[in-house]
Image 1 (cartoon, helix red, strand yellow):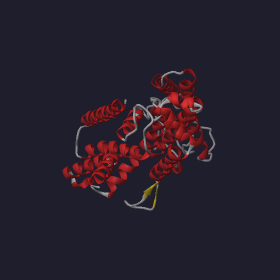
Image 2 (tube, helix red, strand yellow; image 1 turned 120 degrees about the vertical axis):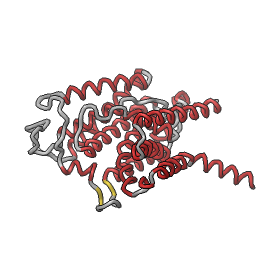
Image 3 (cartoon, helix red, strand yellow; image 1 turned 90 degrees about the vertical axis):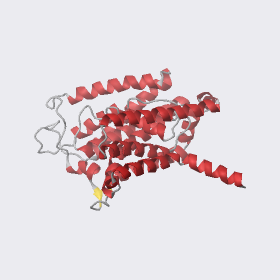
Image 4 (cartoon, one colour; image 1 turned 90 degrees about the horizontal axis):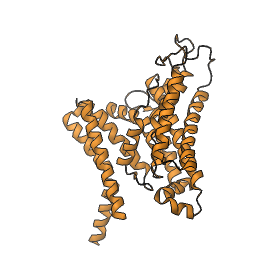
Length: 338
């Protein structure tokens, strides 16, 4: 009986260890500065986490299939620029498209998300049909997307000027909230929660989710069991791209503008958050709950260490060490199973 209780306690601890790490991290920063424990601080961190969570959830679709998507950040940048360029105020002096009529906000947002989906579909097609390693395929896409974004951003009359003057209804997506004051609920946080719920449903309640885990666990066994691996991979990469597109739109709305350098290195933060959150680099393992915790941990590191005056360079070192340790533990578990 005691042994059973001990085993249950051990399993409970291992399943929730990342949340304990998050709590310890928050408490440690709070000891150094008690002002860190405020509603305003946590609200700001949730807002910062929202777009990063959506990107990480997209990256997880690829990582669980034992792939890697390096194009995420550049897709975020492209979709941020595209959506912002079409959603400027009509009386703004430096409009990207001076003669573009005002349109429903849904149209530019849908266009941006669709662009992200197409890029993801292209990644999936290259990986599934040409058997190019995901690392190489998405590295190529990352470079090409940045080039395309820079060409678009440099078009006259914009000529590489930061895009600003966004419409109020668009900016509200990133800065507005339900209610007022420090206890208000930001729209961007609610959108991220909704996306996380939808991804949880896809992961756990759909055939695509089951096939995703099967492909990541053993791609040869997935083939033998009758799963159309190529088709499923293209769907998974396409969904990931659409999520990057949504994140790009929200990032433009949150910051009130966009440049072609938006999203730079976001893919590394997303992959790191996934790995720290328990998504295995060898494929077949990953849960939404862990991804959320991983994103929050890196947000606390970024925001919290800045809050107590730690140099951003030290923050990079700490993040790097966390990533290496997380991957090392993941590989050890994989080797132990072998």
